[in-house]
Amino acid sequence: SLSKLKSYIDQVKDKYDYVLIDCTPSLGMLTINSLAAADEVIIPVQAHYLPAKGMEQLLNTVAKVQKYVNPHLKVDGVLMTLVDARTTFATEIPAMIKARYGNRLRIFDNQIPARIKAAETAAQGVSIFSSESKSDVAKAYAGLAKEVIADVRREKAKICAEQCR
Image (tube, rainbow, N blue to C red):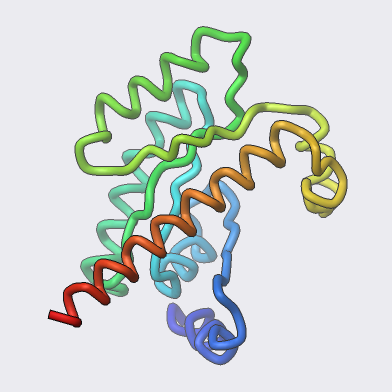
């Protein structure tokens, strides 16, 4: 059922500042369950043409989950991944995403570079921070975390200011 993952997360979320659910790049039941349980979603998009086009399908799925299952789900932003600075796509795809979605979706400043070592550590189930902590991939993920945390702090300050009036 769509509420099973949410009930598990609800049981433990008071013990954590953040609970991250990392899904495979598919729109299967695990992804739908994750969207049903989530408060926010970060949409990773590979800096290639086809994944960028597939983003529309994911946004449609998110909209359906918001309408029918989880009306509080918020799209936090789009994260460009597997960015290869040696190619023209490194600038064209993010620019295309910004042109098409930038007025309604945040595009994170940090972009995750494509590196073989990062793919190898992921395949081994090892954190990039424990295996390659000085790499540009680890620095990009740390930068993303700082962006997300800064957003949360701004949102909390805004809510506090509104409630204190």
